[in-house]
Image 1 (cartoon, rainbow, N blue to C red):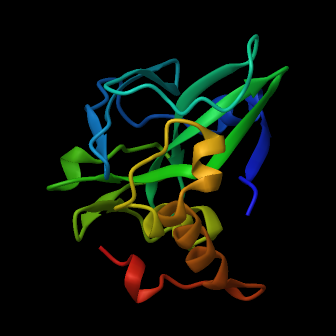
Image 2 (tube, rainbow, N blue to C red):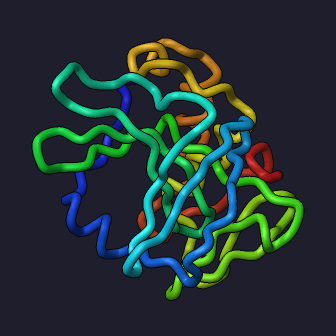
Length: 177
């Protein structure tokens, strides 16, 4: 199965995620990647990670990590291609927590700690949320090409895809924390 990617306008992503507090906590995803991030003028961005993002594009494009704010708070690998942000679904992992203070908080979305993962009830599960949950315990391959050949990653992607229909998504039992 080929790697899936989503294209977003950089300005749409930058403007849609605003922080509720200026001092952002250090976050950690389900595979142990530690994330530093900061907020300025209502916009938040990743400023550093303990591991590099997966390599998915050729230079001069840029590979980076971005925080996602769906039903789960997520850390996803992405690439900047021209003026578009390409999100690599197979690289997304949920943010883990011991309590609510370990979770990111945005003005328009509050996260609590549910079974060790940062979640919100203000958003319905979508394919990206289910994909990240199904890959939570799978090591993130170093490249998108490697993710396309990794059996555990492909199994998680198939499980997630089968959990979503036109009526919405449900979280498979095998993907629950």
